[in-house]
Amino acid sequence: MSWDSYIDNLVAQTKDASGTAHADKACIIGIDGGAAWTSNGHACALQLQGSEGANIARCFKGKDFSAFMAGGIHVEGTKYQFLREEDGKLVLAKKKEHGSITLQASKTAVVIGHCPEGGQQGNLNKGVAVIAEYLESLGM
Image (cartoon, rainbow, N blue to C red; front, side, top):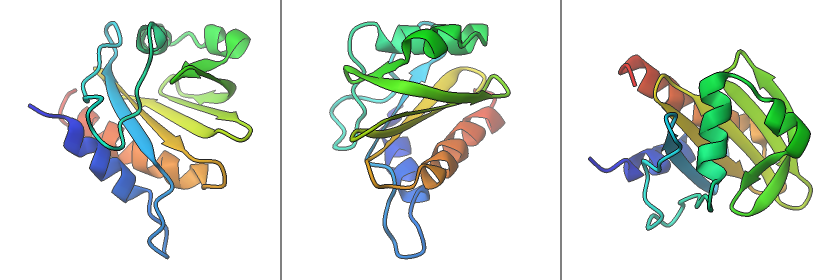
């Protein structure tokens, strides 16, 4: 099964009333180990590097975000500043001139979306939530 269509769906869910998408990249990783569910071949793929996926998955699986608080969240080789965590399922981060990152967990996956600088992270949050909640509804 290809999960890449979920990237398109996530980006589409971030569009505002004028039709502007507020996500430019996204990916889905497994919560057990951080293995990629989506491929890097997709035009809007968020491409995690090295141990980034494993580090993100570990924090969500253990619901312990102290590593994010202390060292930031590394995505595509960029360190984003941890902003906050909600309910052990949602994490928000930002880096000036690089945009923002929204991460939300389902039972078995973490959905990660990127909003470019100048975009609205609130719209990104909505798009990430739609996908994460859909996976959750499937028991995933």
